Picture (tube, rainbow, N blue to C red):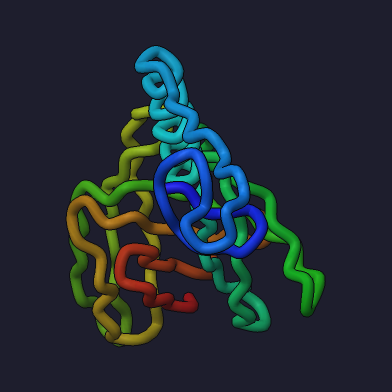
Length: 163
């Protein structure tokens, strides 16, 4: 149905049934153009999903900020806008996590897959007996300050763990 450009009423035909003004012609999109438009929209949705913002936590001041990250890269340099701390975030997919208790320590071994498809093993200790919630296929962020791991973040469930 077309809308009258003068009075705003909806109707069909060549003239408006309310005011008698000429109605705009309904334009139909040829199938080839409709297919091109659908492909462009699908491509835009794919790009949005690939570059969807991630909320990252600063390892120093714990400020939460949204960052758009390139999914083709594993490491991303970040600068906190609140405390100005520069840190590097490694975004990975968790394959497996193991932990073992030692006296007043918990030692973690996390097998991950990077954006390039490479597998890595990240090992670290915490002084607390807190069990990090990391499961297979979770998206995780490991934040490093001056090369030292300071924060582990599970982006899938939205939890973070300062080290």
